[in-house]
Amino acid sequence: MQYDAIIIGAGMSGLAAGIRLAQQDRRVAIVEKHYVWGGLNSFYGKDGYCFDVGLHALTNFVPKGTRGMPLTRTIKQLRLRYDDFALGQHGHSEILFPGAELRFTNDFEVLTEEVARVFPSELDRFVALAKEVRETAWDERPTTFSSARSELARRLRNPMLAEMLLLPTCYYGSAMEDDVEWDQFKVLFSSIFLEGLARPEGGVRTILNLLVKRYRKVGGELLMNNGVARIAHDEAGVRGVILDDGSELESDTVISSAGLVETMQLCGRATLQREVQPEDRGRLTFLESISVLDCSPESLGHTAATSFFSTQSRFDYHPPAEHCDVRSGLVSSPNNFAATQPIKDQILRMTVLANGNRWAGLGPEDYAAQKELEANRAVDALIEFTSGENLRGARRQNWNEHTVYRDIFTPKTIQRFTSHPGGIVYGSPRKRKQGETPIAGLHLCGTDHGYLGIVGAMASGCIIANERLLAPVQLS
Ligand SMILES: Cc1cc2nc3c(=O)[nH]c(=O)nc-3n(C[C@H](O)[C@H](O)[C@H](O)COP(=O)(O)OP(=O)(O)OC[C@H]3O[C@@H](n4cnc5c(N)ncnc54)[C@H](O)[C@@H]3O)c2cc1C
Image (cartoon, rainbow, N blue to C red):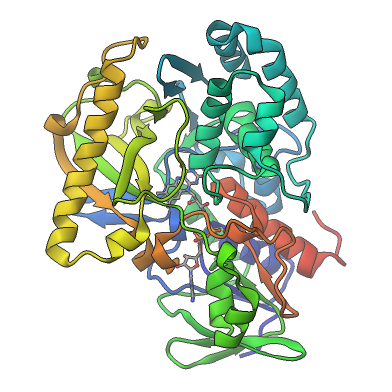
């Protein structure tokens, strides 16, 4: 079967690339290994509950009609309707460090006032930093690398403020250990603090259903539950793909959202060995527990939509030696976003850093026990830390005794459902900022193109489709 383009993966970036191409009358097939679409931001049912895999908050929130921003520009490119995303904004979120608490909302003035309250001598420098971020175009793609930790140290005098700004950007999108690329930091700072956080009512399914419906409406083909086993290529470039069931699809354009290392592996051992260096292999992954409560998170003192926390003044952001590092992380609740209808279940989600190799090495019984142990340890660590802090609002209470159901997923689960080795979430630390690969006609989109999160991944799909295939036509 001959296609204008074949796309590997029906995650956010693959679906967006597919829509862009199909609505320009290209013959496109998206091939997805899993039986559910969404990839790292999918959903699943268990024991009568339906959970989102990777949705704490949609970053990049801007109000309807805001021009030229990633969310609105992407929605326009995909010819979707803003209102159909049914976005409810967070009431507030917070960053908690020893002796310091910063709240923020989608009104940037709130964070500015908080910085003035907690770090008064830093206010002018913080305002200058925000101005610098505002003046950087979100799709500017510098090829030089610099470290956000070093750049922030040059711009701010109080290291604690720098750490407090770094932590959310690391947890929401850094593939680098203990740091963020400076240009990536600026994108993430803007997407979290200058733009904002929201949640689609109905969860991530709301967005995925819109994407899949639109893709099919414009004539795209979606092959589910049938992965790409191999990418066929020769000296002239890519030739197509061979699927797990042995069938072949032909095209001289393949867009892969599977990740850099994964894509090179699909090209064969020689390509993998030649093109992938040890520093291309990311290691950052997480353990996440989802607790269904018998009362509202708010009644237990958890009023923030998202709480980023570190029990140390300088946080570690690398795979721990043990199964998990519970000294930092984030807690989020879908119930603390605005919604027209109350959510059926009361939920708290907790995310901490995990070691993919450690989890992979456990047998079934040890694995089940370790999951429970680590999820409990994480909650206990947060509660112990917050009870020693002089925080605003009611004391945060341990929610384990109010939990009526809990599901926990680990790097092993993430690997099983997304095919990312080791359950790596943010891909390679060395991004391919033009989506480039050494094989002509083979392009990367999504995570390893360097655009992360729901909106980032969708934007990446549009950009790769536009720049690599549609550049000669008039873009709308
Ligand atoms: C626990 C967690 C929490 C997160 N929280 C948030 C959040 O709150 N907000 C936010 O914006 N983002 C969040 N993210 C990040 C966000 O989910 C990702 O950045 C984004 O979904 C990446 O999309 P993608 O299309 O680039 O890649 P992926 O989602 O990885 O899509 C790749 C797809 O390719 C498929 N695939 C792989 N190999 C093959 C093959 N050989 N053949 C066929 N198909 C293949 C996979 O099954 C997958 O569906 C979170 C992620 C996780 C895991």
